[in-house]
Image (spheres, rainbow, N blue to C red):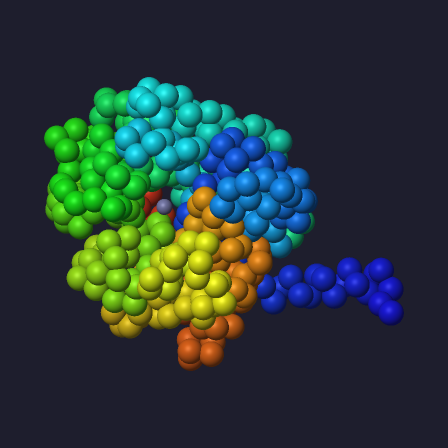
Length: 381
Ligand SMILES: [Zn+2]
């Protein structure tokens, strides 16, 4: 038997064996507000509170603040997610964009409450990331504050290009133009088509203020039109590779090569339907997918780049499903810590693994936020 003091020492040593994670896609506030989840409770507590509830992902969640701390998630991109696509999907679609806007503002209010309680910390610029990481390294573990960069998945809540500045002032830094279906601005996953006229105007407004464009979920035609029009920083927050899993939700090699050329970073997703071709929700057993497949998608991007500077983690683990649709060796977000070993087995060096787990995102935001447009916007704010 270990004494309490020895156990404590052991925990401290183990902590240093873990690797800092930056996860570029979590729908935290959507889970809190639309799924009514108290993210301060542990994953097992949330699961037991949902026992007997109907609906995919209920009682099977994998993300909560305690497990994010255990998994050394120091920073994430946390979304605002509310759309008016007309698809009428419960918890996601609203009849008007005005309602979607109010829902997104409610989600922002949740992040603010968590921030006031010292649980989350909004990161709006590079100095705030630097000071956050300094403190996180001191406190890492159970008492660590989780940093977040505010992003929007589908831009319907931005009522017009004129309101981009207002959203910037509220802390929004990354915007994806569409989610599934058609938004006011672009065609998204599952449909084909270009940007709308308003979409082109929105991109101009985003560029002016220094907002980052997230190309995840754009249809191919919207993707190519957006990247041509937009000269600011571009990222793909949660995308896998079409060469491994066919379908418009994944990026083609041509798109990946283009993003690499633009200095982008692409976050690898842990959602099984983006990892296993022909995945059928509720039918395919999760044993067909392991975290090793996530490592395969990471590896493909690194092979296309010829380096490990453009691939990262964008888990999407709370994106409307639970453990039933995750790799079978992942129970909670803390299991992202298994990825370093999988990359070691593929021959990746420590420096490259650190880049994939956190370094690439940190470099990307440091570069993006030294963009002159942002400095101008901050001075003017
Ligand atoms: Zn998504």
